[in-house]
Amino acid sequence: MNVKVSTVAFSTNQHLVDRLMELFPSAQVNSEGKRISEDLLPEYFAGAEGIIVGLENINAKLLDQLPDLKIIAKYGVGLDNVDLEACRERNIVVGWTGGVNKRSVAEMALGFMLSLLRNLYSTSNQLKVLTWNKSGGVQLSGKTVGIIGLGHIGKELVRLLSPFNCNILANDIADVSEFVTENKLSQVSLDELFSRSDIVSIHTPLTSVTRNLIDAVSLRKMKPGAFVINTARGGIINENDLKFALLNKIISGAALDVYEVEPPIDRELLSLPNVICTPHTGGNSYEAVVAMGLSALDHLNNYKVKHKLS
Image (cartoon, rainbow, N blue to C red):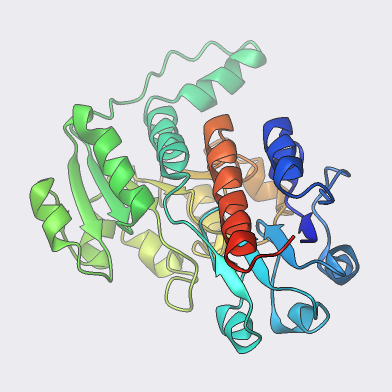
């Protein structure tokens, strides 16, 4: 079975590459260590029967150029970059396991909360230029945290917040009433979540409903001292509106791990002192990288065994 891997994080992890070669000795990985541009994907994936993809855009146009493709194994948990209908129409299997990197992303969100509230990031940067700022911010304990999206990661974040005795407000389009009750959360509307939260943390997929969910209107509903965290998907926050809100002290700060365009190009936003920015590494702890990679390999190997492929 001819297998090709495009995602950089998988391709640069020796443990995963070794396991890949055990299962598929002729497999090809992205040895360049750079994300493959969309126009080069057809050439790279040519002849592949199975592929492992991360954030690459898998659409009908690409699939039409890959007649040998039988299965796509997703490295990661988001499926917004894979045209599932186009895959179904072409009888291409999509292997995916939800929640495999939930602890990694939830830990990042928690770290962002502590860094923003306690001024850890800003005062560290100031000290690097010999500015001695003793402003220690406020504690996370007892604060009101609004979580948008109670899927695998949102629920994991609730568990991590337990020792801090926060007042947690939750919003989700799915029925999460059982989890809300068991964990003594408050299920509220988005408007109430925006207006009451000290921290708003986003954990939803990017859809037509969630695109620009955080915009000028929603930002103005928040407290002046509020912080916004996005470890989910770029595009959920309107970056121009966020930049305006930060520059004009409509909210106090933000932490971003995802962007409308990746790598991001808005240097003004990235350089703001009240913005923590990371290069989409929420799900890239070593443990999560290995777990996501092994999950993708399991999907490919199970398909090979089921269909008796060599």
